[in-house]
Length: 584
Picture 1: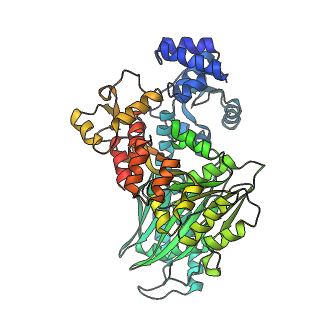
Picture 2 (picture 1 turned 180 degrees about the horizontal axis):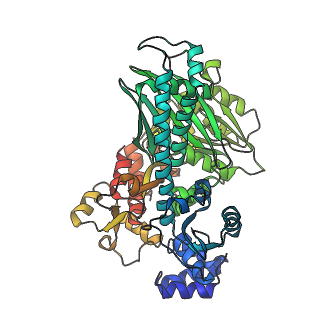
């Protein structure tokens, strides 16, 4: 629901959410760009989504409720099913003779208000709440479900012990493993582990066999946490069940195997990329969770901003050349590449990819899986792709000289090529290609932009404000150009032109708050290197990565560390988290 300018301005000034001067500047920009004032305020970071919701509630006469410290009876909470609550941000929190009070981020969502009314048989009283209240309350579903999962695990583990018919060290045949994988207790435990991981928004599941137990861990926001411990007797059944789901060989325990499977339901489709590895006490399994939905991702939501975002957008307008995304494993390279592909995926272009593995299925894009065992390598697949009349080619990863040479050749012959590379910095990408044997003149004539990135965890509201001391600023200044960061904060109007570092508030997790509560979700910190004439000359002269980076920074490149400090100054993450990510 768009908000009329008059009531919006009145509320913002009355509530002191924004200064009069900032409001006037934003209003002038909205008039010049012919866009809504609320959108300009959001884009500039002057207002949050929650601020806009409060304005809408005020204009519509809808009460606001804070659920963060409110106890909600389980029977009332579960009137709205967990999938519906999570997907549409609706929480049932109080029942009175007048009706059922539900807290929502969008109290004008009449469709789902009507659905809850029909399913519950109660009159629905919508109330506005904020994002943090929704997040906190959704944890109540998790705690209830986790308790239920614990009961299932305990019950089904006992059943597996009773079913165990093999002695320690005895070889189990494929037929026996198949039977074990189809036993109901095993199926229930595996389903429980997968469901719990999806609910927790884990990126990976680790199933690790040890001498006396099986440890299951989830990676949440880049950090591994223990999820549950199962008796040793469950190991064979868990491995067998996952192998059946993945169509892997049940009788092969000496060699690693890879595969994938998918869970489909009405709320979310998740693909699982599975890897098995023999260890001293059995086969370890790691599963990467890959939600199918990627279309809602944008470069802005991932953390790209300002001039760096403009550089990427300009590079994507090109019809030839290379766009490279670099970083270590787990730095979000694939997500960035898929987001760029989603931007470029229009009816007027033909996009083909060669990947290992295909992490996300994308409509209208021709995706090919590498299969080295039959000769379908990155290089072989790329040779075939260029004969498929593509406009845009995505190579999952440049790993060797042959693939690099073919990708560069494709970029020289009228294609826009996207790819990833394992390097620690944007400047380090260029010497890496030279080390592979690529000629310097080919590197300089094809590469348009290099995006280097890491992922840092976002702070929740469980954070405390503080200011850096002179000594801390001096220490950080040894590693980052704080003058450049301060100028960027002012350029993007995060700070006032008169502000200094002494005026900047930083945030860190509150003392005693669990790490899972202090951080949720992740965002990119990035550095963007664009090719220009002076940089081409340096590459031709075989300058080192450090020399290239020093030149790029003098030309205005903001490093990953500096971008992290920029985001820490906005309260998005903490200084400690930035240094942790950059040092990995």
